[in-house]
Image: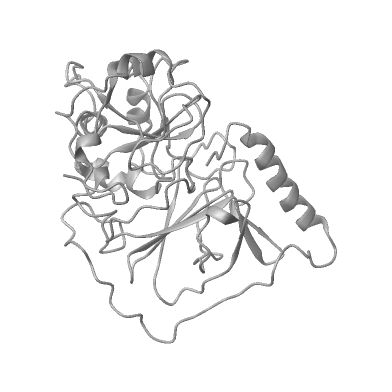
Length: 349
């Protein structure tokens, strides 16, 4: 998650806080004591807005937001955005797509599968307080972090260390970035939570664990859906430079004052004219068909045309290599503004 263009300074400050905490012999005055909470009985049933009709998150009966939310909308017939050519021209350097996930052989050297893992818990999991660098834009609730939490790259890695946790009892999603644990106290750059059965967005102007202020989970490719050939949502991706603006349903800016660059929340699709080679693997074709039907969402600053998936050793190296041959120039930006029902809701027409 990149909050601003000089994000390196902010992250350096956060890293310094973590390092100083680990080095001190006594308690750190800036960190509060750990608070754990355990329910003695299941919470009341969560009221769902819709009955899940799409892919469920493995290990749960929860869908990653309702089927009529913006993430799941077919944009294959959406009009090309008037700024598409300009945005594409300023989305360089690019040559091909680059999957930000794969089996073990993590480029960070941790031996952990490359990508963002998902942890599933239930109502019995203890909740902890978390210290946030961007505290004013983080949800200050108890987070179900613990020794069982899977962290992107591992707790000791140099990755963004995203934690994505789904409570299968309540279908509530929790996400943190630059997640760290020092002397029993959890800290993170930012934290956000959503009810997966709801259409609610974060307050406009708030970041999340992605610079666009959107949740990670609904925009990540998951092994199970790709293997089944049934990807039913858009996919997050990054660009090196973005405009200091955002489009619905994104909530946050993290760019420069140049409108020739695409804003956060901009949606792109693989052009209908791009021919998907029938000789490609079935899982490769499933991903490319999803890019034609649901597209990509600009969600953060990072390497150009890098797109996200879950950490899973079952990903095929051959599929990853085939996806790397797809030219970024085969994409175009689309206008999804006509899908908006309310600027404060992710529900779409």
